[in-house]
Length: 285
Image (cartoon, rainbow, N blue to C red; front, side, top):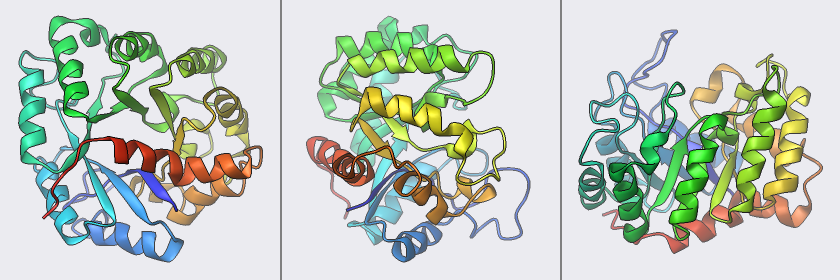
């Protein structure tokens, strides 16, 4: 079983440079097709209500009705581009989102320049407490320097699972690469913090250089620390600017040959399947 922990889908392509088929380039049918041809059983769609897609949560919820056995929704709640980012009332907005959409999880993008201290503010504490009580998974986009604040939240809410997007924003190059990896690895001591094993095209300094041998040391060290508290993700369709959907799978399945067979199966789907089964029950009809 293979479950993709990180996909997107939009009614209109939101990024530059423009594409010739913006209504089709990020459509959910494109995702389902790639899943079919590459043997991916299920996928979680990380919603992002950006640019011409401010109704992305609705778009993805509708897709779940058409493909209930293939897709899960991680609804966008108060991400950095929203007018409600880190404003009062976040817990109530999270409750409203859970009532409105068939979401197993919420996704929340933290601004890189932010210090993430909001996580430990009264509003932030209420927000994550509500997520824990609702049985949601927290799918968080954050940088390595946010991990200290994340650890505080994870300690306060041991029953709340955190999935960090794209290796928590690590890079394989740069003066701070070593320190950032060490900081993220420190979070492996908390059993409810997980890494999405994805984003090879973000970690490298040459995004065309599949299978990204320059990034191997980061994935290997994080695997040694997190083990099966990692979940493979493709980043489709954004990944298309650097590699194919199949290559995003084989960058891990074939080329991360330091991973044991049993652990590979867990990272490809077993770990995420268990987390989704533990999360809240949703009605996709």
